[in-house]
Amino acid sequence: MNKIIIAIDGYSSSGKSTMARDLAKRIGYVYVDSGAMYRAVTLYAIEHGMASAEKGVDTEALVKALPKINISFTPAGADGVQHTLLNGKDVEREIRDMQVSSLVSPVAVIPEVRHRLTALQQQYGREKGIVMDGRDIGTTVFPDAEMKVFVNASAEERARRRVKELTDKGEKVTYEEVLENIRERDHIDTTRKESPLRKAPDAVLLDNDNMTIAQQMQWLLDLYHSKCQE
Ligand code: DC
Picture 1: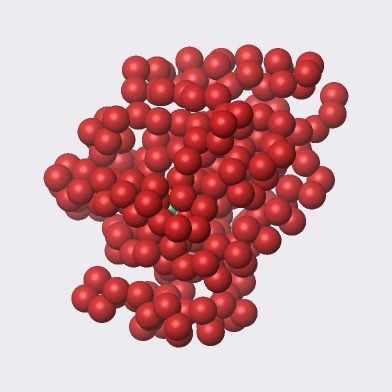
Picture 2: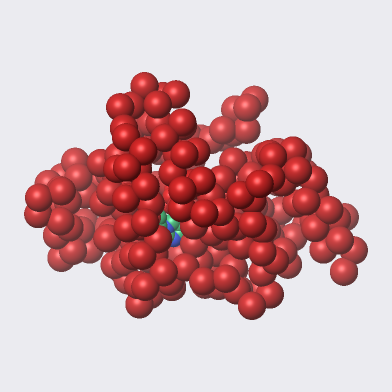
């Protein structure tokens, strides 16, 4: 069977990363979490004094530092999880914390950051056989992807899922702060000038508010098999 490119876009915490990773594992494709790449750049900015809650993001300094930022992934472990490497260091845990989450959207609006990461993402797709999730994968990174999915769920449902994920990891967060962060990111992601979060006209909508993980997987597999026959 010919390999294809699968683009999964959607709102923050809509479950798209888990879904994309599980699908890739199931069909033997490579999975790339493009959000992790924006998070790694944000972590670099925080660690080098270029981003903070008080001062925001120092765009000029970050753009200058971009050539020094290398992002890669470890191969997937048995659970299908790849770890993100920032200049060779495993930062998988740090990039998921609230500090990074609250500064990543302002970093992701910077055109130079987007151009650099988009080019890297396109390299990953050269051989096809890839599932990539993000915000602009079906619109900007792979506009010709054979299969495009746009995932949505209500902000409240997404906040509930995210609180569970963070508290399971031992982080202390409240539902209110997580909901606020999700709403703020939705706003920044959908209104930025460069590659805003949009459903590509040829993407298929998946509203997963009331779907189990197993139901979503079946839905994706059905779509994948139909796309492979086209
Ligand atoms: O998927 P995520 O929540 O880990 O993504 C983190 C942030 O990165 C998100 O707020 C927007 C940004 N992002 C983006 O702008 N474009 C992508 N392709 C992926 C993520």
